[in-house]
Image (tube, rainbow, N blue to C red; front, side, top):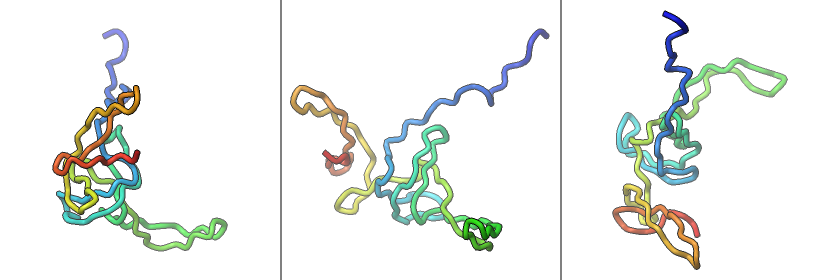
Length: 125
């Protein structure tokens, strides 16, 4: 065998199509935190996971660092959750899937996110 075998870990990963954005309000629809509502802190399109405020809390053992003013102990922080396990919350508090509508403003065509259930626009103008 000439050459090395292809290593799938070195290949570029395909990004996941996630319509949820940072600062969106979402509700968890599956998993141990089902029913919780929180704000999206971070979206990772490479892994397809999102970080939601107050959801999927995990304990982490922290070593004290007096130079940085960090007190040691067990700290709680958010862990990522799969984007398929959350739905967007609309202005009236209902959960909905996210669709895309093409709108023409002046001479420009824009893609805007809309709630499928209510039809309201999710993007700020």
